[in-house]
Length: 225
Image 1 (cartoon, helix red, strand yellow):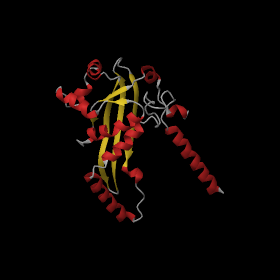
Image 2 (tube, rainbow, N blue to C red):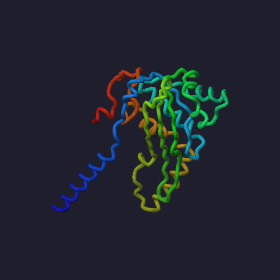
Image 3 (cartoon, helix red, strand yellow):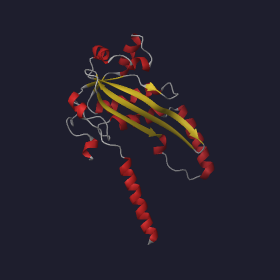
Image 4 (cartoon, rainbow, N blue to C red):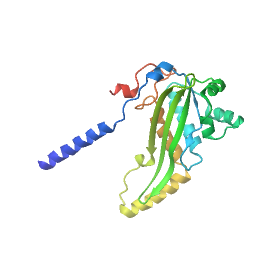
């Protein structure tokens, strides 16, 4: 009986912890007021050591934003536009005045990104590919921050437990590191991160845009209150 009571207490604590750890819901007041229809994505700041990270992340974030109902300026065209004007570094691009960005692209909002982590790391008995991104959506007409968010995903999430003991775990970790590095698993993990961060169906994601059938409906985080 005491064991059963202990299990119940542990479950209750776990559930309570899960509720406490849930981040507060996004405030969409400014977002709704601005009602952006088009978004230009700027080259991300890259805090990782992977040079492919910025373009890998940009390639994967277009889909969830567009599927949420917004027009996303083609990232390749935007990137080339900056290069034609001598801007090849993310820090310089992020420093461009919003008035100038609006003048060049005529977009309603700009998405500023920072890649916090990207790549495969090996730690004794595990080898995981992690992609973490933070983002800020800014109204190019007023300079107001409309939305902010962050998300992360790891290859470990889709991997089952190894039943081969310690040796099996070490071998698996080494193999995972080789395979995930050679195949750039970060590209696939970036897709999961982007969907969690930007999809209007995600908790604290973007609102449904004007091209979505759900335009005007409450955000997912608002529905869960």
